[in-house]
Image (cartoon, rainbow, N blue to C red; front, top):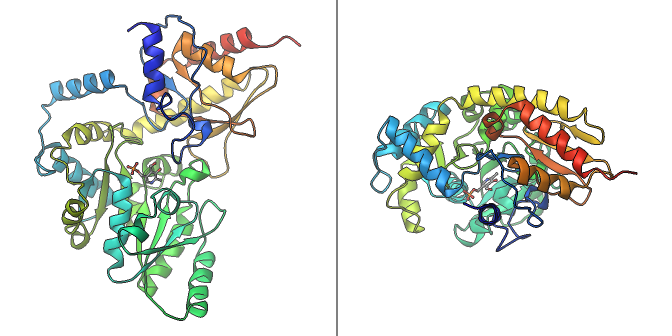
Length: 401
Ligand SMILES: Cc1ncc(COP(=O)(O)O)c(C=O)c1O
């Protein structure tokens, strides 16, 4: 592929040619740059991206990876989700979360919505974090499709406390005349709209124990739960134990092209496939996603410990470059704040890193901060090479004052 095509591919892959500023739920800072690429060759076919959750494999890389996986151990197809790689992944997730069962769904949105619907039963209300995907990014599906009313808690915060929850429940009890039941309380962890900050396990346990006493069910939007586990040392099973159902994404950190898994008691999970069918979400075969997720699930804990370790060295080194400042966030995970001094033009640096070294850097937000995101792509390159690329890049784009 020539470099202009490669650049177009990069842009297309990031959805930038069609919808440059409109990707729902992803801030501007998560987007790469789209203009000004030079046609310089790079010797690094695998991108190190500081933008996305995962490796962001392009179609060719995805197909090659599936072929490699299949050569090691032939991938077995599923039939409408039954058998093959999909069943194997479901069993693996049930084991990992300590739940009775797990089921593949085509999207996390559907997993969240069906979990709320099924846990709620005839209750009409569910409490959700105001800053959550469930509340803000699922197109009012609960209200318009499932007849459930989502009530936001913890407005303007990354999550909510037990006190916030109790206050909201008490408000409804006292200020609404026609009572209808509260069925489910939802927590998202880590919180995507709060730059991947975690909800402390102590806070989750407090809320879970109260909900148990009151008879409310609990659902975890754990799209990125592996990251929370990697950065806190709290296992997936310990998180999952606080909830009735847990959803984990197959594409955020497991590099599949899409898909979700929902785990919980058999009594709930056994109702899911019928619900998915009603919504038209039953896909003929999902092995192309589940085989990939299964592959990346193996060894994920070790790889992330390596990413965390490498990140520490990388950031220490990058912070020695005059004018570069990368800082971690309070309760943060794999997203850092990158600030460049005025004499270093971000766009020029990003284009240099992309063109010369296949290193991807995102845009700044309106405060001039780049949400510098680390992921497994860091492990595909020698750390010194990344640091040297940055040093050369900063030198070549720095404006002499
Ligand atoms: C926290 C969170 N929950 C749920 C979803 C929904 O996932 P899907 O795109 O598979 O519907 C996302 C996707 O961005 C997410 O970030």
